[in-house]
Length: 239
Image 1: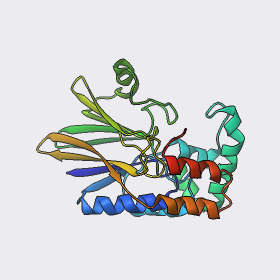
Image 2: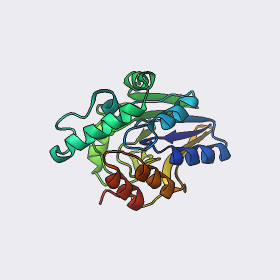
Image 3: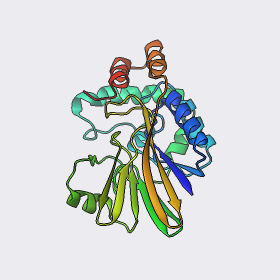
């Protein structure tokens, strides 16, 4: 079985189009979605419609939770709180009620078992949609925060920085971001997990797409924080 894991689309339907085309070319058997579908992008409804058209398992990310109920104090820096709620209001204005209800009802984890291989997938950590666990964190932290349930492979998203690490015979990977990478590479990111005869192979895939098109969509819109998002897209970085 060849599985694809995608996440952190953030309303960038152009990037999602490119990733789904790449997945089709690679003859993937199944796609899983690990959250953050609409918020902070120029095409929230189209991005969500594309995800729902996959008819597959989808879990909730922190940005999906923000779309449903707003950004709370303490979840982001105080200076960003007002603007991020303005962004949330813009996103909600582009979504129909059914879409918001769909995001509200998403589960928060996936437990997958194929050919004796167990996979635990979640957005940020098994216990939080918001906690940040970066690639260079100490191994003990990975074990205590991320590997809390029995599995061979742990997969998460949220940080927009893909990586693969091995710990005590287990594998943990971050699949990066489809629509808003933070690692300096202006290409969409997703992961493929290939399970053959009980053996496991993992890989990070980067896909080129027309970043300038998405930047232009922001420029042509009245999105409240468009200059900042255009900057992030252009640099693939928060700096």
